[in-house]
Amino acid sequence: MNLFADLLASTQGQASAERGKPVVTATGPRIQKGKRGIEIKSAREIAIMRRSSSIVSTVLREIIDLVRPGMSTGDLDRHAETRIREMGAVPSFKGYHGFPASICASINDEVVHGIPSSRRIIQAGDLLKVDTGAFYDGYHGDSCVTICVGQSASEAARNLSRVAQEALMQGLSRIKAGSTLLDIAGAVQDHVEAHGYAVVEDYTGHGVGRNLHEEPSVFNFRTDDLPNVTLRPGMTLAVEPILNAGSKACRTLKDRWTVITVDGSLSAQWEHTIAVTSDGCEILTDRG
Image 1 (cartoon, one colour):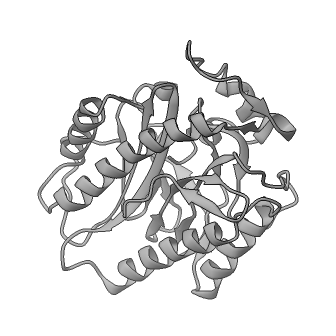
Image 2: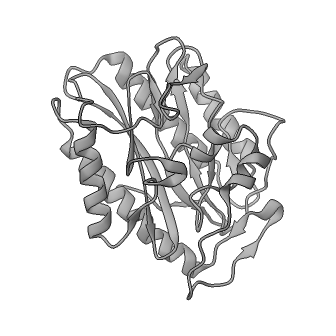
Protein backbone atom coordinates (compact mmCIF):
# COMPACT_ATOMS: atom_id res chain seq x y z
CA MET A 1 0.00 0.00 0.00
CA ASN A 2 1.10 3.57 -0.54
CA LEU A 3 1.56 4.98 2.78
CA PHE A 4 -1.77 6.21 3.94
CA ALA A 5 0.08 7.23 7.09
CA ASP A 6 2.56 9.33 5.14
CA LEU A 7 -0.31 10.98 3.28
CA LEU A 8 -1.71 12.15 6.60
CA ALA A 9 1.61 13.08 8.23
CA SER A 10 4.59 14.69 6.55
CA THR A 11 7.26 13.51 8.97
CA GLN A 12 8.12 10.13 10.38
CA GLY A 13 7.45 11.28 13.91
CA GLN A 14 4.00 12.61 13.07
CA ALA A 15 3.17 9.42 11.20
CA SER A 16 4.20 7.35 14.23
CA ALA A 17 1.86 9.34 16.46
CA GLU A 18 -1.09 8.74 14.10
CA ARG A 19 -0.59 4.99 13.71
CA GLY A 20 -2.01 4.35 17.16
CA LYS A 21 -1.78 1.15 19.18
CA PRO A 22 -0.99 -2.13 17.43
CA VAL A 23 -3.65 -4.78 17.01
CA VAL A 24 -2.91 -7.48 19.60
CA THR A 25 -4.19 -11.04 19.22
CA ALA A 26 -4.91 -13.16 22.27
CA THR A 27 -2.56 -15.93 21.11
CA GLY A 28 0.08 -13.74 19.51
CA PRO A 29 3.73 -14.11 20.55
CA ARG A 30 5.59 -11.43 22.45
CA ILE A 31 6.99 -8.80 20.10
CA GLN A 32 10.70 -8.09 20.25
CA LYS A 33 11.63 -4.51 19.51
CA GLY A 34 14.67 -3.29 17.60
CA LYS A 35 16.01 0.23 17.40
CA ARG A 36 13.49 3.07 16.96
CA GLY A 37 10.61 0.76 17.87
CA ILE A 38 11.07 -1.45 14.80
CA GLU A 39 9.40 -4.81 15.37
CA ILE A 40 11.46 -7.96 14.90
CA LYS A 41 9.06 -10.74 13.95
CA SER A 42 9.32 -14.29 15.22
CA ALA A 43 9.24 -17.30 12.90
CA ARG A 44 5.62 -17.85 13.96
CA GLU A 45 4.65 -14.29 13.08
CA ILE A 46 6.36 -14.48 9.70
CA ALA A 47 4.47 -17.70 9.00
CA ILE A 48 1.20 -15.84 9.61
CA MET A 49 2.38 -12.99 7.38
CA ARG A 50 3.10 -15.52 4.63
CA ARG A 51 -0.61 -16.33 4.71
CA SER A 52 -1.84 -12.72 4.75
CA SER A 53 0.62 -11.91 1.98
CA SER A 54 -0.40 -14.98 -0.03
CA ILE A 55 -4.01 -13.76 0.10
CA VAL A 56 -2.88 -10.39 -1.27
CA SER A 57 -0.81 -11.94 -4.05
CA THR A 58 -3.68 -14.25 -5.01
CA VAL A 59 -6.10 -11.33 -5.30
CA LEU A 60 -3.67 -9.27 -7.37
CA ARG A 61 -2.95 -12.21 -9.67
CA GLU A 62 -6.69 -12.63 -10.21
CA ILE A 63 -7.15 -8.91 -10.90
CA ILE A 64 -4.33 -8.95 -13.47
CA ASP A 65 -6.19 -11.75 -15.29
CA LEU A 66 -9.62 -10.18 -14.78
CA VAL A 67 -9.17 -6.55 -15.79
CA ARG A 68 -10.58 -5.58 -19.19
CA PRO A 69 -11.48 -2.32 -20.94
CA GLY A 70 -15.05 -1.39 -20.04
CA MET A 71 -14.86 -2.66 -16.47
CA SER A 72 -15.01 -0.17 -13.64
CA THR A 73 -12.51 0.19 -10.83
CA GLY A 74 -15.50 -0.48 -8.57
CA ASP A 75 -15.82 -3.93 -10.18
CA LEU A 76 -12.23 -4.69 -9.20
CA ASP A 77 -12.77 -3.43 -5.69
CA ARG A 78 -15.80 -5.67 -5.19
CA HIS A 79 -13.85 -8.68 -6.49
CA ALA A 80 -10.94 -7.94 -4.14
CA GLU A 81 -13.10 -7.57 -1.05
CA THR A 82 -15.10 -10.71 -1.83
CA ARG A 83 -11.99 -12.81 -2.36
CA ILE A 84 -10.10 -11.46 0.67
CA ARG A 85 -13.05 -12.34 2.90
CA GLU A 86 -13.54 -15.75 1.24
CA MET A 87 -9.94 -16.59 2.17
CA GLY A 88 -10.56 -15.78 5.81
CA ALA A 89 -9.05 -12.30 5.98
CA VAL A 90 -10.29 -8.72 6.23
CA PRO A 91 -9.39 -5.96 3.73
CA SER A 92 -6.61 -3.89 5.32
CA PHE A 93 -7.45 -0.67 3.52
CA LYS A 94 -11.21 -0.43 3.98
CA GLY A 95 -11.93 2.10 6.70
CA TYR A 96 -8.23 2.79 7.32
CA HIS A 97 -8.13 6.50 8.24
CA GLY A 98 -11.54 6.62 6.55
CA PHE A 99 -10.52 5.16 3.17
CA PRO A 100 -13.74 3.81 1.61
CA ALA A 101 -12.52 0.80 -0.38
CA SER A 102 -10.52 -2.43 -0.31
CA ILE A 103 -8.12 -1.44 -3.09
CA CYS A 104 -6.49 1.71 -4.34
CA ALA A 105 -7.05 1.99 -8.10
CA SER A 106 -4.95 4.75 -9.66
CA ILE A 107 -5.01 5.34 -13.43
CA ASN A 108 -2.44 7.03 -15.68
CA ASP A 109 -1.37 10.30 -13.98
CA GLU A 110 -2.88 9.22 -10.66
CA VAL A 111 0.06 8.38 -8.45
CA VAL A 112 -1.49 6.75 -5.37
CA HIS A 113 -4.70 6.36 -3.35
CA GLY A 114 -7.18 6.41 -6.24
CA ILE A 115 -10.67 5.63 -4.93
CA PRO A 116 -12.49 2.86 -6.86
CA SER A 117 -15.88 3.75 -8.31
CA SER A 118 -18.54 2.21 -10.53
CA ARG A 119 -18.31 5.44 -12.54
CA ARG A 120 -14.58 5.10 -13.23
CA ILE A 121 -14.44 3.01 -16.41
CA ILE A 122 -11.14 1.43 -17.39
CA GLN A 123 -10.08 2.23 -20.95
CA ALA A 124 -7.85 0.31 -23.35
CA GLY A 125 -4.31 1.64 -23.00
CA ASP A 126 -4.70 2.77 -19.39
CA LEU A 127 -1.84 2.39 -16.94
CA LEU A 128 -3.63 1.02 -13.88
CA LYS A 129 -2.08 0.71 -10.42
CA VAL A 130 -3.87 -1.69 -8.06
CA ASP A 131 -2.76 -1.72 -4.43
CA THR A 132 -4.34 -3.89 -1.74
CA GLY A 133 -3.79 -5.44 1.66
CA ALA A 134 -5.19 -8.27 3.77
CA PHE A 135 -5.37 -8.61 7.57
CA TYR A 136 -5.21 -12.24 8.66
CA ASP A 137 -4.87 -13.58 12.21
CA GLY A 138 -3.55 -10.24 13.46
CA TYR A 139 -1.05 -9.44 10.68
CA HIS A 140 -1.13 -7.55 7.39
CA GLY A 141 0.22 -8.24 3.90
CA ASP A 142 0.52 -5.39 1.36
CA SER A 143 1.36 -5.26 -2.34
CA CYS A 144 0.83 -3.26 -5.53
CA VAL A 145 1.03 -4.01 -9.25
CA THR A 146 0.90 -1.82 -12.35
CA ILE A 147 -1.19 -3.16 -15.23
CA CYS A 148 -0.97 -2.04 -18.84
CA VAL A 149 -4.60 -2.49 -19.95
CA GLY A 150 -5.09 -4.13 -23.33
CA GLN A 151 -2.83 -4.40 -26.32
CA SER A 152 -3.02 -0.69 -27.08
CA ALA A 153 -0.99 0.44 -24.06
CA SER A 154 1.76 2.75 -25.29
CA GLU A 155 5.42 1.84 -25.31
CA ALA A 156 5.99 4.74 -22.92
CA ALA A 157 3.53 3.25 -20.42
CA ARG A 158 5.01 -0.24 -20.74
CA ASN A 159 8.55 1.06 -20.28
CA LEU A 160 7.63 3.05 -17.18
CA SER A 161 5.96 0.04 -15.59
CA ARG A 162 8.88 -2.21 -16.49
CA VAL A 163 11.44 0.16 -14.97
CA ALA A 164 9.34 0.52 -11.81
CA GLN A 165 9.22 -3.25 -11.40
CA GLU A 166 12.95 -3.54 -12.10
CA ALA A 167 13.64 -0.78 -9.55
CA LEU A 168 11.71 -2.75 -6.94
CA MET A 169 13.77 -5.85 -7.63
CA GLN A 170 17.00 -3.85 -7.60
CA GLY A 171 16.06 -2.57 -4.16
CA LEU A 172 15.16 -6.03 -2.90
CA SER A 173 18.48 -7.40 -4.17
CA ARG A 174 20.30 -5.16 -1.67
CA ILE A 175 18.37 -6.45 1.34
CA LYS A 176 20.07 -8.69 3.87
CA ALA A 177 21.03 -8.48 7.53
CA GLY A 178 23.64 -5.74 7.95
CA SER A 179 22.64 -3.71 4.90
CA THR A 180 20.82 -0.41 5.37
CA LEU A 181 17.79 1.46 4.10
CA LEU A 182 20.13 3.70 2.10
CA ASP A 183 21.42 0.61 0.28
CA ILE A 184 17.84 -0.05 -0.88
CA ALA A 185 17.20 3.62 -1.67
CA GLY A 186 20.38 4.06 -3.69
CA ALA A 187 19.72 0.97 -5.81
CA VAL A 188 16.17 2.13 -6.58
CA GLN A 189 17.14 5.72 -7.33
CA ASP A 190 20.08 4.80 -9.56
CA HIS A 191 17.98 2.44 -11.68
CA VAL A 192 15.11 4.91 -12.03
CA GLU A 193 17.27 7.89 -12.94
CA ALA A 194 19.40 5.86 -15.36
CA HIS A 195 16.21 5.45 -17.41
CA GLY A 196 15.29 9.13 -17.25
CA TYR A 197 12.42 8.87 -14.77
CA ALA A 198 11.80 10.59 -11.43
CA VAL A 199 11.39 8.94 -8.02
CA VAL A 200 8.35 10.25 -6.15
CA GLU A 201 9.72 11.45 -2.81
CA ASP A 202 6.44 12.37 -1.10
CA TYR A 203 5.60 8.73 -0.37
CA THR A 204 7.79 5.90 0.90
CA GLY A 205 7.59 2.26 1.80
CA HIS A 206 7.19 1.20 5.42
CA GLY A 207 7.39 -1.51 7.99
CA VAL A 208 4.38 -3.82 8.06
CA GLY A 209 3.07 -6.43 10.47
CA ARG A 210 0.50 -6.07 13.25
CA ASN A 211 0.03 -2.53 11.96
CA LEU A 212 -0.44 -1.75 8.28
CA HIS A 213 2.18 0.97 8.69
CA GLU A 214 5.04 0.48 11.13
CA GLU A 215 8.55 1.83 11.51
CA PRO A 216 10.73 2.32 9.57
CA SER A 217 10.02 4.47 6.51
CA VAL A 218 11.55 2.63 3.53
CA PHE A 219 12.60 5.44 1.22
CA ASN A 220 13.45 5.17 -2.49
CA PHE A 221 15.95 8.02 -2.75
CA ARG A 222 19.11 9.09 -0.96
CA THR A 223 18.34 11.39 1.96
CA ASP A 224 19.71 12.57 5.28
CA ASP A 225 16.22 13.48 6.51
CA LEU A 226 15.14 9.93 7.43
CA PRO A 227 16.95 7.44 9.71
CA ASN A 228 19.32 5.08 7.88
CA VAL A 229 18.34 1.91 9.69
CA THR A 230 20.55 -1.20 9.63
CA LEU A 231 18.50 -4.24 8.69
CA ARG A 232 18.13 -7.26 10.96
CA PRO A 233 16.64 -10.72 10.39
CA GLY A 234 12.95 -10.69 11.22
CA MET A 235 12.23 -7.17 10.03
CA THR A 236 9.22 -7.11 7.69
CA LEU A 237 9.01 -4.29 5.16
CA ALA A 238 6.80 -3.08 2.33
CA VAL A 239 9.17 -1.84 -0.39
CA GLU A 240 7.38 0.24 -3.04
CA PRO A 241 9.13 2.43 -5.62
CA ILE A 242 6.82 5.00 -7.24
CA LEU A 243 8.02 6.55 -10.51
CA ASN A 244 6.82 9.46 -12.61
CA ALA A 245 7.63 9.82 -16.28
CA GLY A 246 8.01 13.58 -15.83
CA SER A 247 8.42 15.68 -12.70
CA LYS A 248 8.41 14.06 -9.26
CA ALA A 249 5.97 16.76 -8.07
CA CYS A 250 2.51 15.58 -6.98
CA ARG A 251 -0.69 17.12 -5.62
CA THR A 252 -3.78 15.78 -3.86
CA LEU A 253 -7.26 16.18 -5.34
CA LYS A 254 -10.30 17.56 -3.52
CA ASP A 255 -11.37 14.05 -2.48
CA ARG A 256 -8.38 14.29 -0.06
CA TRP A 257 -7.08 10.90 -1.20
CA THR A 258 -6.23 10.75 -4.90
CA VAL A 259 -2.71 12.00 -5.65
CA ILE A 260 -1.82 13.00 -9.22
CA THR A 261 1.28 14.20 -11.02
CA VAL A 262 1.45 17.98 -11.27
CA ASP A 263 2.51 17.90 -14.91
CA GLY A 264 0.03 15.23 -16.04
CA SER A 265 2.75 12.64 -16.70
CA LEU A 266 2.24 8.91 -16.20
CA SER A 267 3.07 7.25 -12.87
CA ALA A 268 3.83 3.61 -12.03
CA GLN A 269 4.32 1.62 -8.83
CA TRP A 270 5.24 -1.90 -7.77
CA GLU A 271 5.34 -3.17 -4.18
CA HIS A 272 6.19 -6.31 -2.23
CA THR A 273 6.01 -7.24 1.44
CA ILE A 274 9.28 -8.93 2.42
CA ALA A 275 10.97 -10.46 5.45
CA VAL A 276 14.67 -9.74 6.01
CA THR A 277 16.85 -12.85 6.37
CA SER A 278 20.52 -13.27 7.25
CA ASP A 279 21.59 -13.47 3.61
CA GLY A 280 18.78 -11.79 1.67
CA CYS A 281 15.02 -11.47 1.90
CA GLU A 282 11.92 -13.59 1.46
CA ILE A 283 9.29 -12.02 -0.82
CA LEU A 284 6.11 -12.81 1.10
CA THR A 285 3.80 -11.39 -1.62
CA ASP A 286 5.51 -13.23 -4.46
CA ARG A 287 2.90 -14.00 -7.13
CA GLY A 288 5.10 -16.76 -8.65
